[in-house]
Length: 110
Image (tube, rainbow, N blue to C red; front, side, top):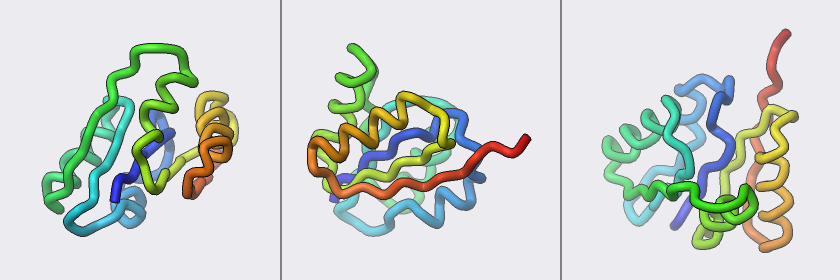
């Protein structure tokens, strides 16, 4: 199963929580669009669990990049702080493309 991961950049969810949410099992490919610390840890997780992963390099507009990340996904995991407009756009794109997606919200504490 191809699983796209959206909205991890700067997300306050602890890495241990990401690991509980991420899929396990052969045949799973993670599709990631950024390269921050959380994504590097997700790649390490993928290696540890023998999962394939693909990094989509951003090349166009925000919407084009979102589409590139989710187009081949059978499942999309979205991490949203309730504020990010890019992540909100990803949610709308998933709905428009009729993708199976789950939104995990972790609102920032002030």
